[in-house]
Image 1 (cartoon, rainbow, N blue to C red):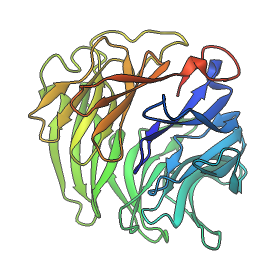
Image 2 (cartoon, one colour; image 1 turned 30 degrees about the vertical axis):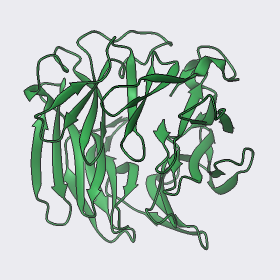
Image 3 (cartoon, rainbow, N blue to C red; image 1 turned 45 degrees about the horizontal axis):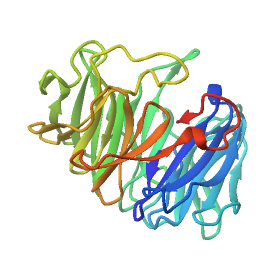
Image 4 (cartoon, rainbow, N blue to C red; image 1 turned 135 degrees about the vertical axis):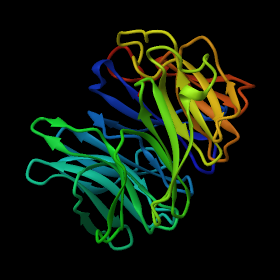
Amino acid sequence: MSCSPVTADIVFVACAEGRIHAQVWVVGANSEVTRPQLLLQSWIVGGVPAWRNDGRMLAVSGGEPGAQALWLLPVGTPGKRIRLAKGGNIFDPNWSADGTRLVWGRWTEKRGERLEIIRLADRTMTPLETSVEPGFPQWSPTGRWISFFGSRREGQMASVRGLYVISPDGTQEKRVDSRPIIHRVWVRPDVILYAHRAKPAAECAFWEVNVNTGHRLELFRTGDLPKWIGGGRFGTNWVRLSPYSALLVATNKRPRRGLRSNPVSEGDIYRVDLDGKKVRRLTGGGRDGTPCWSGDGSRIVFVRGGKSIWVMNADGSGQKKILDVSVLSVTGTNRGVN
């Protein structure tokens, strides 16, 4: 689930039992006025659909395992699709800030995993060879760098992910941090804000790094926050960063199991300033998850109970249900938000 950079639209993937069948939907933050629009039906969807910065286009990967395609979906024009690439497993598309290029990951049996860039004006494709298996690519604001998570495979097992950057022509690759990264966001042209797992395992550490100089600054750790956030064995389950503050989903309870609930992402939503000094609990009840910021940072969209999409102000006030996903025409049972 993610929010448009410029409008109140929200894109989400609704899934049937076992996530075998998926549908990509867009709904406005005021669903009483804006009805949900079905944009794509797919066997699977590879990652979160990506918004272009003008809010008018989505990039989505979908299809059957090993035979996926990358689609452009114009928002507001249901049924229209533009296919950019096909073959293998395509995942995690991301737009450049100017909307002229896309980067994504692709796995094929012959080549393994690699990053690929397309220039939309002439459909020129550029593969990027990396020293590690790449995932979750993200353009820097100026287009000088692409950050990504990397892992090394030993036999059938992949090692812990680290944070890397590479230039779009593939000539420069740098490892920023070797620790398991949870989330990251570019906050300035050459500066990344990121969170990684820390010891003990329930804790997260938050850092800022300049990818040109390599200078890193630790901002705070969840272990230094009040005990009522992320204490206990299960700790912080979900992190979403912005240039101003972090959203955390934390719980002291063992997550509920079963198809109706995501066992790793439900709890209460907290907002933490980046110096770690101010912490606010925004929701209670232990059934909320997957929060994301609106484009202007004034509101937060989240999922409650795995089944309904809600919106609230950035301070936690004005909580309102937008949509109950179970009313959508998703094939199968146990419908939920991915």
